[in-house]
Length: 356
Image (tube, rainbow, N blue to C red; front, side, top):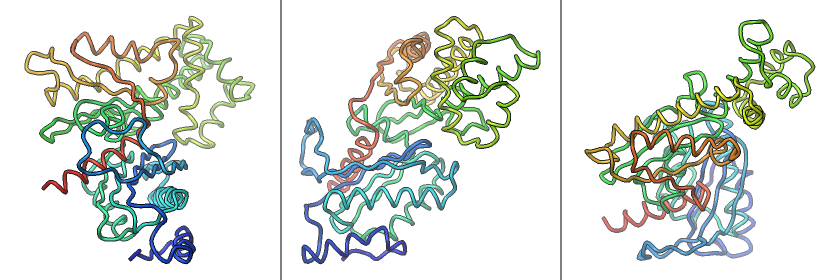
């Protein structure tokens, strides 16, 4: 029987559905995969595949519904707003798929800001209060879904996420894991979109007051923001210091670097070094490249900073930098989005639980 949850309005569709179908959803068992980031949150609803399915999954994976909403990182927007967003996307995905909570077999919620077992347990308790007891629940950092999107649900290898924030996360076949960076802008995710843009804004102020060299970044970013002087930039920055708003300036930094601006170029070079350092730290701690450091390992590359901006070549520069220390790195650009990766993780976790 479907649980009633305190946020009843979001789940009102279930009562209407029950009246039409006489109880239960209109489709068979389903899985929910959620990728919750600092910029957006995506939930996909996929049909439950046979647990005896081989590793050769359908391509493309069947998709019943996909829903997108805003930030669900509790460190960025607060716990209440983050939970409201997560609940909203799950309810809407089930509604669009013609299903309800009783049909859900497994959920993998892979969200940024899950950095400690206490974070996991708090979210698990919240989910358990919302879904029927038969539903298998899995909560991971968003890096897990990003890796799974490149390995089709297998938690093995390393993932580098460089979007609004940045993190390198690695997993081994025997269950060990390690991370580097991902501590948020205050603690220095300097290879991230926020880090790149924050350095650019700082460079503009330094150039304006004579502490730093003149840079094309000044005119480019002021024009992008519709500001007339660097003095106005201070007010713009502190009027709303949300991470995604700052990170959105990365394309202007890349354009200036491509136009030959030394300051912008140095900022991107610093970002490349920071991203490579994060990956190298994870590879070393987990021994992903073998005892001699030359073994191959997958590196899944995700995020707007390395997926876009191909003109300056941030992604290739990062790979080149990593390859100096670990020549066996095998870069992978996922064919599916991280939310699908989360759904594949949920399916694999569910399959493993049935085999135990």
